Each structure stands twice: as C-alpha cells, then as structure tokens.
Length: 333
Ligand code: SF4
Ligand code: SF4
Image (cartoon, rainbow, N blue to C red; front, side):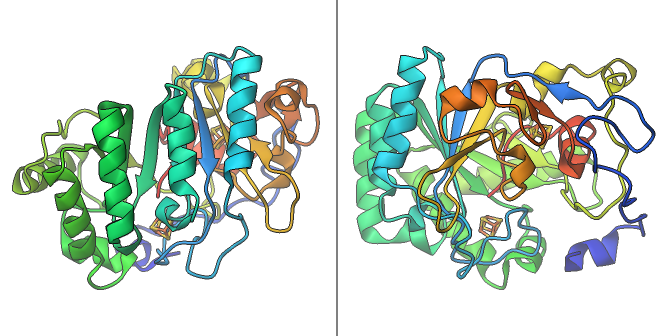
C-alpha cells in the first residue's frame, strides 16, 4: 500500500483468499458474471512497461527497470491493424499506454501507422522528460500539424497540487509534468487529463481544482466532463471486494456493455515471448488466465482460463473494484 493510502484511508479488510479463485463460480457458489465483446471500439497497445519514474500506485508496476512487457515494434502493431481491417471489426480508436510510451524507440512509427489508417489515436503519458526531448517534440509537432485532433495525449496528473502529486511520483514530478503540459497547450495539442480519486475529497472539489489548474495553463478543457478529465478509482488487489455474479448487474443497475472489456482489448508482448498476446483490457497485464491468444481472430473464440468463447469471466479483484463498483473505464499512466 502506498504512503497516501496509509495516511488518509481508513483500515480495510484484506482480500478473502476464497474469492476470485474459480473462473466459473464465486466463493459463495453463485455464477460469476462475464462480459461479451460488443464492438472492438478501442484497441490498446502496451508499448512496454519501462517508465522514467516509479509511482507508488502504478497498477502495472512500471519503473526504470521493469521490462516484463517488452517494447512493441511496428511489425507487432501492424499485424493487429491489418487484422482489424480483414476481420471488419470497425474499430474507432487506437490507444497507446505503458510504461511511458515515449520511451519506446519505435513510438512514432506506431503512432503514424495508426494515424495513417484513419484511426483516432490516444497516447497516455506523464509528459515528463521522455516526452520533452527535442527529437520527440519535433516529431510530435509534425504529427499534430498533419493529423490535428485525430491525436490526443492524455496526461497523468494525480492531483492538481504539487504536494499530493509528488507524494506518489517523487519530488519535482508535478513541475516537470506541468512543464510538459504547458508545452502541449502552447502548441495546441488535443489534451485530456487523468487524475485520481484517492484523496479523500469530494469529486466536485477535485474537478474545481483541476479547473483552476487548467485556467493557469491556458488549457481549454471542461473539467466537469469525465471523458476529458478522467478521475480513476484506486486499484489495490489486496483490499477485500465483493465478487460480481450474474445477478449483480440488475442489483447494481449496471450494464455489462459499459465495462471496458465489452469494447476494448489490449496487446502486450511479454519479455522473452516471440509473439504478442491479446488481453481483455488494460487492467490485467500479468494474469495469464486472461490471455486470449496471439491474434484478434483467436481472441474472438478463445476458451481457456477466465476466457469463455471470447467472453471474459470477471475473476479478478480489479473487475469488481475498478470496473463494476468503481466505475473506471480506461487505463492509467
Ligand atoms: S478488469 Fe474490468 S475490463 Fe478488465 S476484464 Fe475485468 S471487468 Fe473487464
Ligand atoms: S503510473 Fe504511469 S508514470 Fe507512474 S510508473 Fe506507472 S506508467 Fe510510469
């Protein structure tokens, strides 16, 4: 548990070890909920787990030394883009996450390959040193000039104050990200912000804080629009959460089609693997029960582990805590 959680969160029960063990049934014997892919709206690529910093809360445990997910190459990405077309999946958006995507030496080839095919492209970045290198900024400017609002950068800003952001990301992290954000604003990039909800403050207060920060930056973003300022709930796999059964959707008034794995998939390449793997979402990068195969075609019919004919059984605490109960819908960086 990170330092913030220790100081501001009340004590919570640790995860009951009987939960999230059987993909088919919960600890109480109820049928576990599953989610079927509707349309593949967004295909995410994890460009690699290496990051310039090491955040206490990072759900993927990225750091300057974590290379458990390798850098994706152009040929890795192109084969999935080809498949989208041959399978007629009608995908709208290609997302890039890490780690820090601007550390991947091929990142611009990956971005251009996606933009050239007409997709909307979303890049999750901390906007720090890797993005602020001159060659990177020059390439970004070129892409922005050609593709404009087809390219969006979503910048992670855990909190709108330096004091809280830096507790998670290290001294000086806020000012470095602010600098990167200011550069993006000054050069008229499409920008979203990703914050967090762990601060023991009400959401309207958080959004008002980000609104003030946006005004300081000259960033025209509606801080009350959850598609442009995304506030992510916490993901701590060790905190006890209820398991999601087939009955929970009605009880909670939730629709399975609103969960990320109903409209997304993520591609990762594990260290030492010859081929990338398809995963249901960005939130379970290491749990092999969610591996769906080496191609999108395989992922549509796969039955293995927590995957049933291409549907995803919600056999992980993140499914409950982040997606169904927490309302999270996309990845963090
Ligand atoms: S973590 Fe969320 S998006 Fe991922 S498989 Fe579980 S419910 Fe689906
Ligand atoms: S949260 Fe983002 S910036 Fe922090 S270590 Fe993880 S990938 Fe890097």
